[in-house]
Image (cartoon, rainbow, N blue to C red):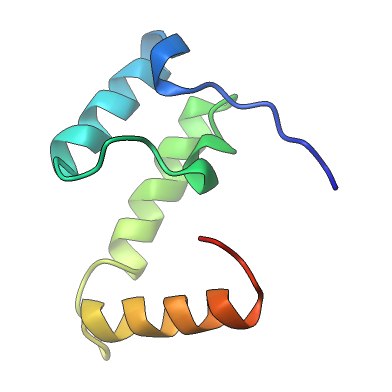
Length: 84
């Protein structure tokens, strides 16, 4: 299985630390950055682009509301045996 080196919250600096701080401000109930996001931590510029796109696509209402999108994502993750 591949291993992706990521930078966690305690070791983040510069642009990545700024991004992590902003993410915690938007998600105050969370205690750590999800691993699926940390996979992009070596490229904070790309991580920011991925998250902005995700917020527009997954976390806004459109043809489906956010709750429905979250249920579909959870179901697909379960089918794929993915813990995210």
